[in-house]
Image 1 (tube, rainbow, N blue to C red):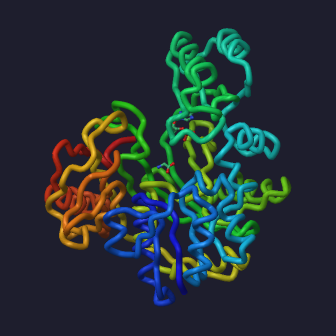
Image 2 (spheres, protein in one colour):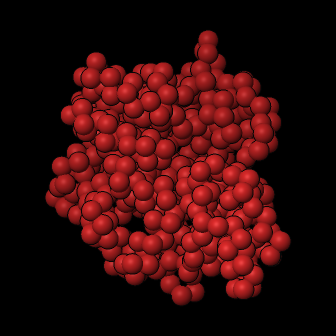
Length: 421
Ligand code: AMP
Ligand code: GLY
């Protein structure tokens, strides 16, 4: 099979490395990819949102399967475009991807189908939103932009002033553009967070092993929210009992709800959960693999990913057994100094071999370029240094040992991955 991976981050590198384990893969292309991905697959310089060029490339290069990994092209209908051209594609179509692309849609879906989530109200008017927050008078309160905002459209306001500023920045200053035409004002929940990615063909949902993301930039959960500074799998808070409960109260009802809405979801559906004192609740859905969740979940996958992808596309997921390793895995993200705010690019990275790896761990490249035999930084999150081992402690030790071997000026990473709530 010839496969085209779409995307350019650490998640896509993890998917590429997993696909390379499959004996069924002949040629693997990534568009646009990055420095590390270019050492494992053939990178093609097509912008991630350019549907026409992607489809043309797939036609010209006998692509058997297109794998659309990031949220933006999914929401923009890239899977629809491949399907219209008769090319098999993994990922939800635009109608189903709305479960991530619109928080208003996903909240209304959960309310309609009794799927546990935080209480909320939707507003298209800033003044009404502020009046509601004033009358409710409970803090913290959560203010969310409706649309995609690079994971940054959620503000936890500690008091009325912060809440007013949040509403203003989203709805009036349009900090996240059109994503802020509607906002969700939501009850603040507490408890450990769990990421559960799942495979689903629209009928059957098979959860993958659980994971835990560390979203804040600095140790002890200080600093701004980021795309994710590190992950572990499994998530120590997610017991077998909870998994069973979530399957019954969240995963299956969601799949059925999407069918009932005429939007069957096929691909990877990511459940962002919070284990509250009142039971597990959905914080958000993502229509794709998490980043850096994929970097700890995929290394534990033993079944051929190509077989799973085919089963999802052919709606035969119930026929296939998906096997996971019992090992634990840990990913430490090395980021550019300053991230998630302004940072420099083009800084040389040392300590990696010519494949972009180090001994004792797997290095998934998120923001790098490869030039004249050297790797340079090219993004906020630069590398996801990942190790697996029989225990979480050992996996963390291996990952941090590998991090010590890698250098670039300004590099910043959390020292407490796997150690916080
Ligand atoms: P989201 O983009 O919806 O996943 O939100 C980003 C992060 O904000 C989540 O991972 C949570 O840590 C936090 N968050 C979102 N909604 C809530 C909520 N209702 N209560 C508490 N924390 C929340
Ligand atoms: N790591 C969180 C996400 O991918 O949305």
